Length: 139
Ligand SMILES: [Zn+2]
Ligand SMILES: [Zn+2]
Image (cartoon, rainbow, N blue to C red; front, side, top):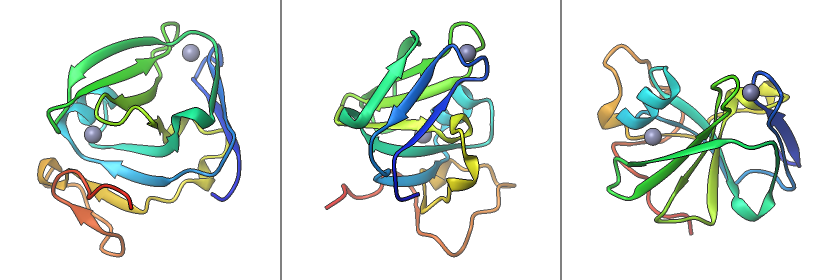
């Protein structure tokens, strides 16, 4: 994905546009992502928060993330679709749940994180880097 993109929740009452290409695309296997996504792992598109424009009103809740930092997650109050994740440790970046993209074919994971928590039956792509926990901070 090398340009601006857009997406929304299942009922389309929440829509977003992102003005620039993502910083990264990843799969997170942490236990929080498993619970909040209802899936064995969560695939996210990591962007600069400043590039995000949102219409509609998501609901937010905060949990203590696997990193120890507080993590804010949002979802659509009408349809329940998980949308955004933001860590208090780095509010300048936001992760968007990949299934909400208008063009999901643009998503290509570049790394797997928190693989220490991955379910044993999840097959990890050997062609991309795996990090047992959080990856090193981007340069
Ligand atoms: Zn919705
Ligand atoms: Zn996670």
